[in-house]
Every structure is written in structure tokens, then in C-alpha cells.
Image (tube, rainbow, N blue to C red; front, side):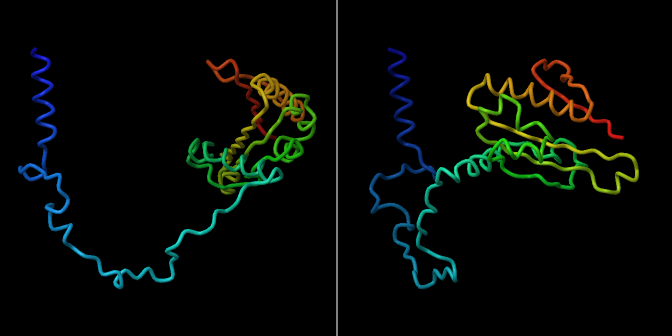
Length: 192
């Protein structure tokens, strides 16, 4: 009985809410002066801006979809200056990855040929470094972020391992992991 009375009181309170202490009317004709106000349409000059919707851009073709999806992936990538605020000098490549052939420019020789890349769909890469003045000071740093999408999680796992091994072999480096993240592959290039 107490719950029913509380519910009825709550509903009565909710339906009687208003903004100025007076109950609001459900009748639109008797509402505030806003209903009586008129708009001078001639005064609404939009200038050279269009007021009608434009036709849709169209649909991506099979040839374009890889580029579109690669660019869409870019929305979710941490950009280099978010990792290190001094890494602001954007470098090439910063682009969508449309095929395994793009990997040579990004990761080096032999990377397109790793077996797991048979299942590569597309990807995105961005690259930046500290400004040239840092090179002279001996504090140069760079970051190249590559995100690749594969057909299956298993192919992605295999590709991460195979690509890391190939990149490390190209530079006579070793592959390691990040502390506490055993599934990562890190190649650190100390430079010459």
C-alpha cells in the first residue's frame, strides 16, 4: 500500500512540474509568448551559404573501399605528439595502407613477403620525429605508428611476430616485449 501511494505521489509531482512555479499547460495555443512570435524570413540572409542539402557523395567502389577504410582507421590512432609532445615534425609516410606492397616504404625490405600478409586487408600509418635541431643536440626521437587489419585474429598475431622478426633482421636488431605485455613486439633502433 505504501509503495502504491509513493508511486502515485511521484507521478503527480512529475506531471505537475514547471519552470516558473506554475503548472505547465498541455494546450499549445495557451502557451507562452513564443507561440505568438513570428519570424521575418526576409531577415534570415544566409549569404553565399547553401540552404538546400547537397546530393550524397556516392558510394565507395571496390577499388576505393580500402583507402576509405584505411582513412577511417586513422581516426582511432594516437598521433605521435600525444605520445611525446616533442615529436612534432611529421614525416612521410602518413597515409592509408592499401596493400602489402606499401609495407616496404614503411617497414623495410622483405616485409611485404611475410606469409601472414596473405591475409592483410588494409591499414594506416603515421610517422613523426623531433625537429632537426634535436639531432644536433643529440636528443632526436621518432615514432612510426602502423596499424594493420587482417582477416582473422590468428593472422594478425602471426603477422605481428613475422613483421617484427623481419624488421629486426633488416637492422640487425632484436625483438623484445614491453614489460607486463607479453604479446607485444618491440624493435628498438639505437641508431649509429
